[in-house]
Length: 505
Image (cartoon, rainbow, N blue to C red; front, side, top):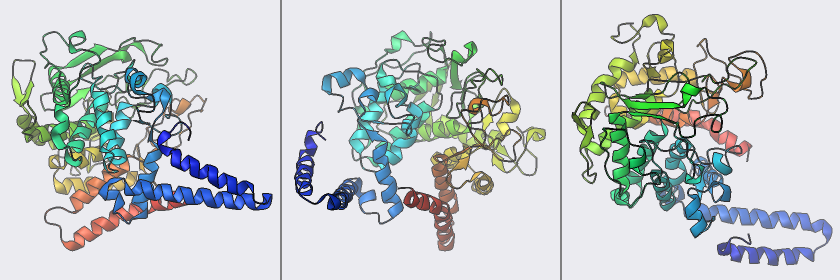
């Protein structure tokens, strides 16, 4: 504790306690030490929970309190993984806390801060726990390194970020909306001063007019305008020095907005969404081949973009009305939002009766669900049953017909595991549920963990699934009995998490 001056009183108290314990018989020392440390731990937990905002402080649920305390393990000061290295050198490396992508493998160094993971977690880890200043600092730190209209996949303390994620930017935009809705400052953050680490003039596409950046709202508009005009670039320092497995075309990054309003991008040799496992086995011949490229219009990105433009269309504090398209046309945020509402189910819904304008039913393994992608180069991948549609449902429920959404949510139970959701339906021919990263075999589908997102269960998508399920089960015509059933359904799923927290402290 010596490097934390604010904790000096606790340090003094422990020294005094140690002095008393040192005078006890040796056999009594362990019991008293355990008692003192247990009391200190309980007091710290109570203190922390009291300062985590009204939602946590007033909530009686042990599950909520347990999860809130768990967030402390993910957010903190790690000198090797600060948000901005130059700023840390000036202000101190203990003044740059950050959210780690996961424990223990993504806790330190340049692998600590991932844009996608940070903004998936920001709402639960920082906003719901009342750490609004920390959330604000995190948003602005990533906003300052926007390049090519994208936030980084890997931040690398803002030194050499890598821009190979299509989805991270849209989770970032959703986090700004969540901050404006939940933090006391509200939309004031949009006028927060900003200067880009990589000026627009150094990377903008020819013929694309991007706004000058002076505040966060300008950065948001740069992102939206860059996507509307089309993003196409080759990764900086492309080659084995940044990715020892990727094949050369994989370093080419594209993204844009198609005629239906869908954000799309990627190619068959890169993996720009969270399902980003790149093959690394020569023996099994999967090196440089993404297991789940998901090139095309990914359902969760479409949903996150819809949430963003819907919000901006109604936001008086946002100084822009829409975007300019390539063909000298403009599109307001309201028009973009309405276009997505018209287009979405026409392209993504897989009906049970087989009657669909944009479905090749011979490729359908399961009906009554939403496509995972539209426009994948491997067309059967469009129809795979994965949990990504529930992200879109949670953030943009207005795109979904309630009756269809409820069918899809029921079918989503096929993906439920003890704690999370399977990344692929077990009935899919590509399903491989057992993941072993050290598999040195010859089976392409599993060698070196190629099946990371081809069946293994992930916990975080479950949150979106439950939020979507609760929303559609508690619609405007829902009776008190329906609402009670919705709560019971959610709690039935969460009972496994309660047991896990208490059984694995």
